[in-house]
Amino acid sequence: ALRDAAPVDAAPIARYLDAEAQGLRGSAQQGIRKIRAMLDYVPTPDEIARARATGQPPPGGLITDASTLLNTRHAIDDMLETAEGTNNLNALTTARQAVDDELANTVPNIKEVDAKFAELARQKEAVQRGQTVLSSGREAPRPNELASEVRQGALPQGLQIGPSAVPLRLREGARAEIERIVGTNANDRVALQRLIKGEGDWNRARLSTLFGQDKARAIIDLLDREKLFTDTADQVIRNSHTAARQAAQQELTGSGAEAFGVPQAFMAGGLRGAVRAAGVRGVDAVVEALRGVKSEASRTGMARALTSNDPAILDALLRANRGSGVTGSEVDKVTRALLLSASQRSAIPQNQ
Image (cartoon, rainbow, N blue to C red):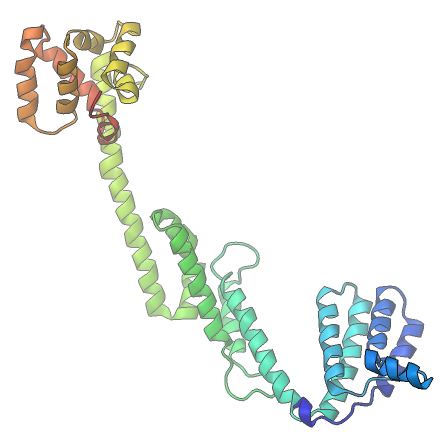
């Protein structure tokens, strides 16, 4: 489009800006003066050298090149992004409109090009907007607001023909955010449900607006199943372990409180740690049982056997230790103390 452009006439724009600069003050006046300076022609080094060689003044005046005026409009757009104050915004917007009108008169089809760039800018904003629709902050739209944005976003603007791709970009942004949430919370099903499903029905409505009711229902149902699985696992595994620990400790000590004794010392330092702890806490019923095991090899064998689930090994251990004076009830107390939970069994060293 710029190749076929006619020379621009910047004189009317310059006169308008000069008049505005006389009446404005503050940041608005400074902005208008910057734009006015952009309309002045800046000679090239070659032109300056030729002028000096001929004794003539370098060329000046106003710009006539359409590409330079287009760059002026881009510069005004950058100024508008950071402008503050109503007067400043109004002055810059009016100046941009004057530049845009001159470009429309001299550059063929520039409005069609502008429409394409405007559509791309809308799509970029839609992707960023889509990444916020599932959040719970103030920037997140209400379900009815999102539905309105999708409807309005599909409408063409300016010289654009056909529907806009803004709704598609909104979906892509939301999908990217869901993938990010899944990637950073893959092992936390509760967090996935909280971040994607959210509290209440707003996220369900938002997902339905972007992806349709069927896909939204499938996503929510999947999250509900995952949360149910997690809750069931917690109830069956973790709560049962807690009950087993409390029951074993209550039987050993007569109290349901969990304290650091011989079983915990075994976790931290193996059989040696348990024996050291036994020397300190002599009142524990487990202490006497552990002291009765004289051989280090027997202690190692007891540790290995007690961390397995094979009854035959436990029976063999009882028979092997009868000669050392350890009674069956004492070994049974040691067994209950050491086998407090599956998580503790996995932490016991196999070799000491």
